[in-house]
Image (cartoon, rainbow, N blue to C red; front, side):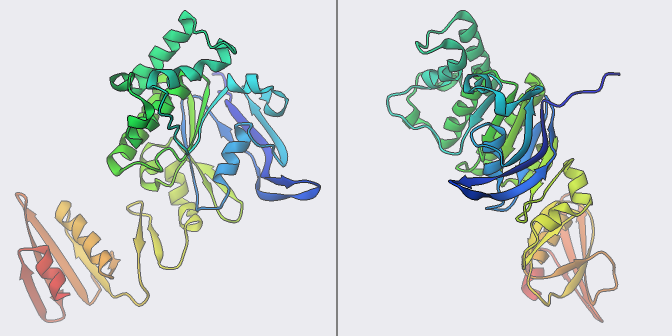
Length: 335
């Protein structure tokens, strides 16, 4: 069986900034990364670690400090802007908000690498635009002006423009930054589906760690020290990379749930027995009010959650004391 070749490959890539004759300021590297067609890659990391710099570098907007970037086997540094535009489409954080531009016109701009300076659309261009509109479900607001769109609608239009550009690699810098929760979920699900349906590689930077763990085929996890760990989401959780990257005082990454817990020092331990939604949310509530959850039953305080036909009850034990409750708030009041 033939070995699948990466769409994007970096060798010893070092990213940073150059200022005049001063030595380059290195942010991260050397990085050896592979990105394959049909994958959704989520780039995660704390603010200031260099996520946007990495995206700008691999998209050709910013010169690498060292190393090389190959896209479809071509050295990115040797490609002209027009050549890069046929290989990479880029969506930056800022939305385009022009009162005079309608949705269809903006999506059509994605064809500029092919239509030339006059912007005359061929039949092939129009078909590519129609495919992008269908893929991103933006047909309902084609005739509207951009300034009439919600943030979620505008982000989908920007994605449609990138899809119309019809490049093998699409890069998005924090596409969910200005969206509400339902819109963030919908967009991440859409990006995941588009990568599979179109066999394009989609690379995004995001702070949506919980969503990234659910939809990413691979995660690039940057740390403040300039290191980058790449791999399956599950691998990075199991090998401790997530805990390391987001390790701060007062914050714990729970390897069992894939979520972060806010904690205070000197927490009391408590064990919770039981399964189902009531037990799950009981653990959430106890963590929120300052308890540390213990997997064993050797703690001084214990809670048993029983759920029968959707009706839950709670039993609290501490030494010789046993109390029963019909509502979670009653248990929390006692604690």
